[in-house]
Length: 344
Image (tube, rainbow, N blue to C red; front, side):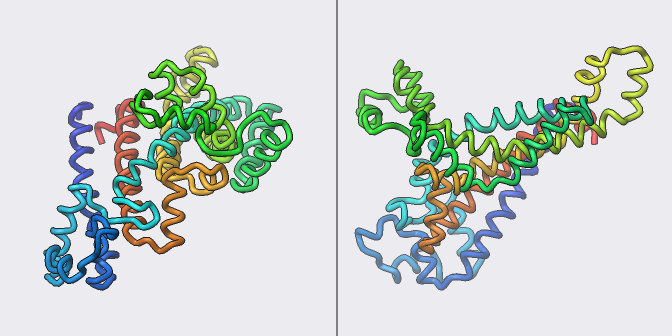
């Protein structure tokens, strides 16, 4: 099976997965009364809510399969209901909050994945040496630290004591006013990227300074797992028969590691990298809360605390979509790294 056929097959498999997820979420919705479900279709409660009309209009008194079909049509149109927490349409609020989370992930994920894989390889190659012991010790410490504790410690040191970096938000107040002006073009919603595209290097530097502490917090916590998985996978690969054969043929240590062992050891690490990236895109609740970043995670946490059903269900659907398409990308990367996967 070629690469194109493999990708097409994976894309087709997404369809039944999406249908299954929609059925699962709708089954949760069906547990509510018709009056409660009616709020999922309210466009703006400030203009008044006529529950009987909404119930009739959206078939909430009809059989379940009719309700599901109407609900699915509304979802495909982007109507996920009104959120009292975000004071707007759920989809609009999620899309508005997404850039804040995506900007954190943009700088966190590459560091976690690339540095984690590198350290894991070095730890395995230099097994039982000072490099291995130091890497494993740092990984264990990083994985053991509570996110909220590490975030507060970094704020206490680098903001309160040294004053090097801001403690929260995405920009200083002065630059926030500049970004809100019509003259500042918002291409992506990511302050650092938009600043560069607008030629405002001063805003870019300020945005990066605000990202340092939350990114450092996430990297310290997340990288530990990548290091441990990559080390274990690399050690397993180095013990395989083809590695012994490659060494017997006289290949250098560098060639054995880079051309043979590393490529096969990457599969578990890539799987984990995909999961970690998707989970971060779904919202890093604790980090966003500590550093006062209005991202998706903080919005979802507030919605859950306030029992905002449309927001919680919309967030659940949004998170599922992120995980599905992240797994699709991971599968395609698999096929590139190991062509044998395309033949299975």
